[in-house]
Amino acid sequence: MNNSKLDISKRLKKYLSPQVFDLLVKCGIFIEENSANLFLVGGSLRDILLNKSPKDIDLTLVNGNSELVEKLAAYIGGQIIFKSQFFTYKIQVKNSVIDITEARKEIYSSPGSLPEITSKCSIDDDLYRRDFTVNSMALSLIPSKFGSVTDPFNGINDINKKQIRIIHDNSFSDDPTRILRAIRYSIRLNFKIDYKTLSKLNEFKNNINLITGFRVKNELIKIIREDSRSKILLSLHNLKIFDIIGLKININNQINKILDTFQFKKEYTDDLILIGILTYNLDIENIINITEKLYLDSTYIKTLRDTQEIKLFLQNIKLDNLNNSSIYKSLNPYKDEAIIINSYFSNTKVSNKLNLYLNKLKYSIPPLNGSEILSLGAKEGPRIKEIINELLYDKLDGKIKNKNQAIIKVKQILNS
Image (tube, rainbow, N blue to C red; front, side, top):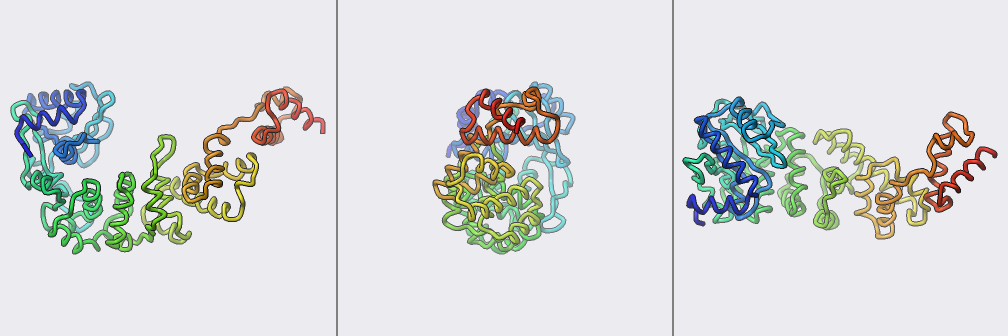
């Protein structure tokens, strides 16, 4: 791999959009004018060196502070949309978002704990706190050093070798979530885990039980968003990581196939669906255990509960024999994601009925509204809602095809 400044500059222009490239150049100019340094780091640089376009733009600021970040945001015509206690910021500029972190040292007071920030530091010290060598490189963006790569742990060499390697022996002890990330990166990048790293992974894997369920959930969400999610989950299963964490997740061939064919859809919360797929075959006791272990919020809990209720309903009722109004009444109380989860595990006829509800029936509106029904002589009260529902159900079943037929129906109801 040619790592000259010229080659890196060409890669930046090739794998970044013109807008993002120009934005980074502009950032570098401003930062150098203010006696600081700015680097493209982590997965952003790794992906470019792998001839890929990075999903995110991660920058590290050296010799800067929050005031400089605020000035930078104003200079590039953006705004800070997020900042945290760990000196991390998100700046949005039109349709682009860049993540900036102030260079820092970290100390782990105990295995699995969140790090304490001890001081701001050089770029080399900042890179030392990172997880793997392939994510511990930095490319300078200031004009005087533009394209210069800092690689203190031979990350480029590990990219060439296609291997995942920890920076120091205590890496997995300090932060056991790196165990999950080692598996995720190795499968995503099609890299092997080097021998010493794998040995340390096995030595410290029981420490993963020390991290909070919230952090485990965040890592699990990242895993299920990966294209190779089923392979990653299977590897974790084989390493007994789920057993150590206390999650009774059963990764079988059916679930693997569903995960491999899963397609993300903007109109639904995909994380809910994927967690529901993973837990579909579990009993209620284990599902409750997972919701507690991972600190899942009420939306997850309702989705998983709805999934099991629909599953039981489908076991006792032949959905393909029901008319449209019965399907609507049966499924309307449940979250869409729970219905989608069940569709993955159902036969074609049942799946078609579930998708009929999701794609058509749920969007049906009554042919008359409350005001129109009142104008026909109905009295205010709960009966209005009952009539509206009755009209909707008749419309779903094809008994009412237009507004005139709906008016006739209401008059019949009021005169009965």
